[in-house]
Image 1 (spheres, rainbow, N blue to C red):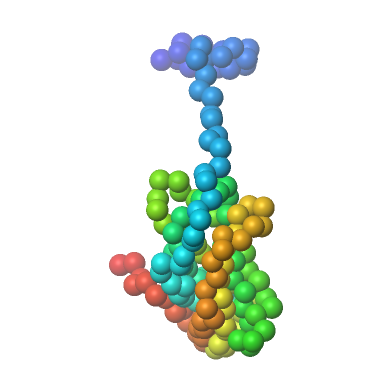
Image 2: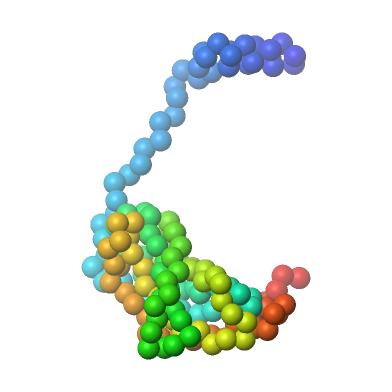
Length: 152
């Protein structure tokens, strides 16, 4: 066993390849962009603490680049959604739907926030979908609001 480890270490130090057929990763070209994207679930509050919230929604797969962004426009005034939260996601080409999540930070406890969501490709081009305005209220300090049951 020690001889095998010594041989592997010497091979690595010498820069000799261990395999004669290296695996080369191939990145496929972008998927065709969907003609029509729609929200199929949500958007809805996934979880909220006194200072942050995660909003979740599902759309039909938008296609295009694998890299996308989940975006929420929000504020305490439903007529002025001037704050923006943005999170990176990767599309799964094998799925007909995509789940988007966005994390909003720096929120105030026991405050009602209004929001609408959208998504874009990596270059900032819209997926052509936007929700109506929704709302949630952050809990009191030390409390958590969750749309999912806690683990047992």
